[in-house]
Image 1 (cartoon, rainbow, N blue to C red):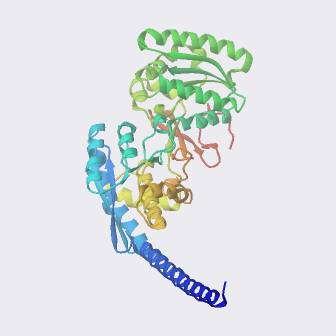
Image 2 (cartoon, rainbow, N blue to C red):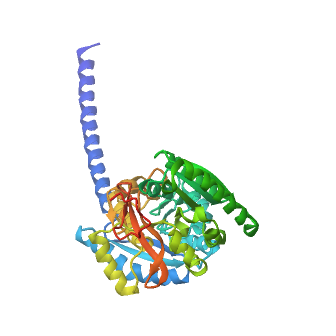
Image 3 (cartoon, rainbow, N blue to C red):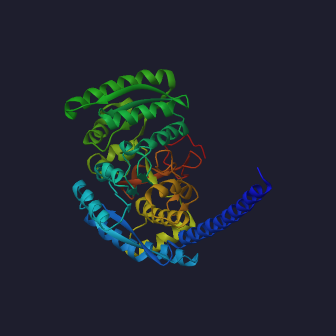
Length: 432
């Protein structure tokens, strides 16, 4: 190859190299512009978030809570951190039905709204699952607790603990009262069986055993007497091995009348009637026990867990504002709606997008860093609240009449029960 041709090739190579540098500079400039545009995508923008209320009564308090407190607080937060973003919450009424809940999702989707705070009821969430997953929508519930909704890899999140989470709370209640063996009376259907099995697993971790498991099936009236007779015989036998203070009766059911009837008839079975009695969360603050079996409920106490907020300065301040509006204390459901609104807002601001797929990646981290009005908002692998406090409720006499009594608190972060110091005399096994 001649020197002239070689020189020409070198010159052309230099030109190509210069062009390449120019292209690289242009690519870098364009990438910078793209980055800047992405940063500006959410500036001077009003983002609409859907909210669904369960029924008429829930709609009124939800509408006022979001418009008079939550929307103002979220937008004030955005203003303080110098974001030009504003949030507007569009509230819909599910009218107590799954059909209307689904119809509301259709309407919100047509409005271009893909992020929904709702639904409050498990039944409404259940019928909506396919639609939200197929249409790239996010549904974030404050109070739906059905174990059937505990699924990973979907577009459904919730700040409510799964119904089955109470098993570890019940097991800790039993352990903290020195109970080594239980006689379980449970309603014989899927929910009752699943909670029973979960409790067996949790209680066994403490060395506890199920002395007798007695399923209660329909018809209630024909079976309750036989169930109590069987439980009485089992209790007499168990006492010879464990002693009366180490045996308890555990009720499991979803508020069926059969449980109330069992309590009403319990006084006819002296061995059972002298034991500790515990319940699942449907037995907590259940007016049926007071109205139909007040004396028996007061005697047995029926210590039962009920999810609650974690007390904090934020909760106290928000509770004062909420009480001013509604003349009732802020509960876990409404406190969780407040927290969900902030989690969603922070996730959108952090991700700089309203894309549901991206938000589903960001929200778990944002939630894990949020200690809100309801407590710590960390989610588990199914997108459900990982830990919650539970109040321990039972029954007793107050001013001459039977009423609900709060006997203790389960600390979800510590996994421990704190029984209150003014427990009735029957609670002799004090742990704190």
